[in-house]
Length: 527
Image (tube, rainbow, N blue to C red; front, side, top):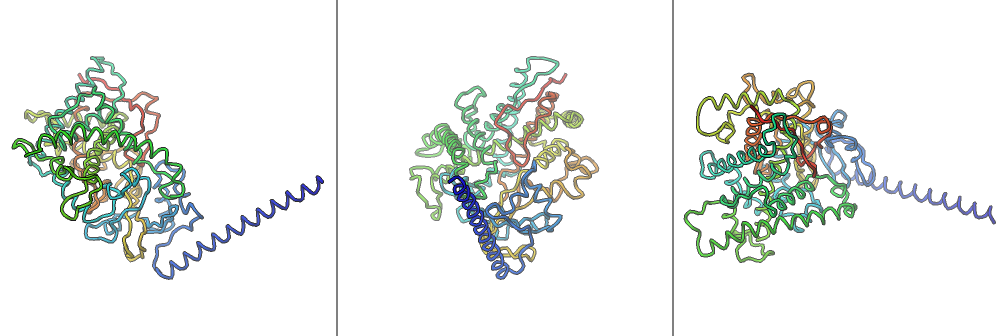
């Protein structure tokens, strides 16, 4: 009986092996057949690696601090444009600035879609269209951008610009005061967790500028602290890459994370409605007071007043109420991007005291030229060459990926076939880490990459971290100006350094968000 049992067991193992082999062969044959059919329809598809079942070519992204480094490595074998299978997504990778410029041109309407990521759809109330960055381009998206653009990209000297400068200057002074109190005159310096103070400062700037200039929250305010922490949680999740984004059948692995972040998003909504929207609608119920400044909230308010959440009448000049709410929250959430870039920049400067010295000397030179305002105000940002160069270098090394585009119909890029629904990946890692612009050690922090011979700030033509064309980031100027002002204010007041333990800890690159943890820097007051 024992011998018979062993034979049956061996036979079962053998049959299982045969069945697995047959299934694997069928999958490979199916993939090969699909690829042959695709090649027949699109004879000029870009070459690329041969994908594995289910995961595609995703294995090439493993083991890199910045995932797109894997795409840069494949460039050596497959060229500047190549095909790439990322899970279930058919992709085309663009490594050359000229090809990215062609694909993202404002005049193209065949590559302005976005991939369908269920995780992001769920985070925006179950409607992909609610997300400014993750929606397909449409008449509704164009309408939103027209509403937002005057506020996110105000003209020099415009009333909105002057208001923004006032709020930035006041918040810079508040941050310096807060840190000075916490140092309490210690001439040797104190290690401080600076994260929440800077995130709150950025949030105050955005809230006052876009919603209500009279409503500045103290850093100790409990409900405001919860609001900023909730935004931090949401921003961190949006910056993550998860396996379910490329393998939708794996969504169960991220479901609990999405549920948790939706809770924080709900807290953001409650705060925005109770602190900004309801008070504004109440005081402008009959008419708008003459002294009420034109803000983004005042522009969006008509879309929110007395309308159902599911009302979708943008074709009649109105956005759905929920869409308008998400648009406002989306823009206010930009404060997290500013805060995280500022934190990353301060860490880079803390590691490089020689760059701090350059910035400090430049600030003193500007101050010596006279004027009432301090050197770090936005109106003087054009003179802050070293500070702007340091910000650009931090952003380059952070190497946060550009949101992918999607082909909305069969088209071509540089002569190559791009079938409908192909995802377009702009490999900014290749642009940021290779080529003559960055010298022999592109991994090193070196602001002179962004300075000309006269040490004036000069943007390299192929450095575009906020994308370009009609899908470019609406708030890129605010990100640059506010982060530069905050850093300049802190460098003028403090010397920064890191303890050995903090300096040894890595802050992940490949995304703007910083970890949901304390962010410590040693601050010493300047004499």
